[in-house]
Length: 189
Image (cartoon, helix red, strand yellow):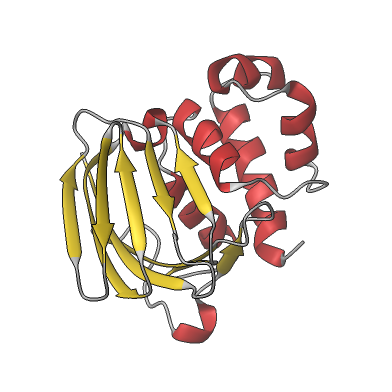
């Protein structure tokens, strides 16, 4: 577990408590078990990307906003120097996410590294507070699923999509050998 994991655990608990919710209420709203939420809030388990998507959606936040608040709790300010850009790693897939922009910046900029063969999915609820998303592939290959639509990206390709009617989204690195790296720009509603 990293220092960010500890701040994330505290932030999830504070967001839940700020809404006057019990763990059972958050479990009902998110579809995540009470036991798992309790482990995450005690920093006994590092949440996966999919689990963060469910929790943040239930809390009315994007994954990026939830992570940005946790990063702000860790002392981030309006200038985000490279050395201070927290990296979060999904314990299930090895997916790495680096928040490039300072908390609250518009658009939010995120750099992602997806291991060979890895697949990360987010439920539509994790996008309901976003207006749009732009993905620019820097290296490797990337397949993006938006509902039933599928887009294959090669290095340099850029995909913009509207999230005002969110759908489940998935990101897949089809390579068996090469990591893919991409930049994501998110705009809020």
